[in-house]
Length: 212
Image (cartoon, rainbow, N blue to C red; front, top):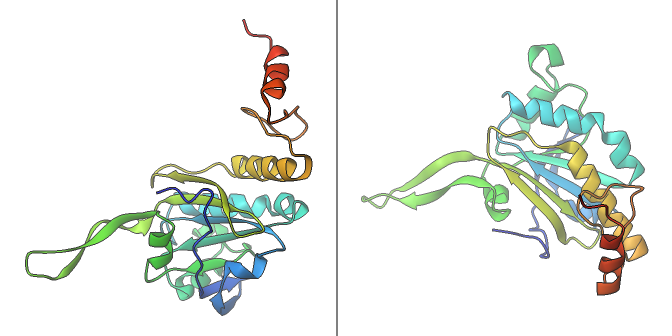
């Protein structure tokens, strides 16, 4: 399921902010009209690939802050699990020092609404509810604009860590387009030439490529 071009699903849930404080009713709506948001899902607290991604986002927070972009993480763990992990030192497998919000999706409804739940609920022959698959979130990353519309999404399977630099590149591309009206070709990065969204613009851009 792609959410690109659609309004990001709205939620209100408990979260840990600033690495220390549990907040009730946390929502991405607080950023609407003010900031773009990188909203990302990871499978579980206290695991292996997940802390590398979470810490990598924190290490790039200065870059996101310069661009006026909020970063928010989410997993199906409770806010108390998040808080315990945030209090655990890095050399003990923790993520102490992470300051951006981590949302608790214990009911799995946020992951389900964003289309990243790695399984689904079903009924067995006795009419009992069961879950097929992994009851965690895939590694989904969503770039949401100031109007609350999803402009980019990528979803990785559980073993595959995401690229934080690619998330930044997508932010740069969106902000460049919104400021200049030019579209960003393949592998575009900040400082590269973009092109007018016309046939002449495409022809001019392609005509300058040196194809062997």
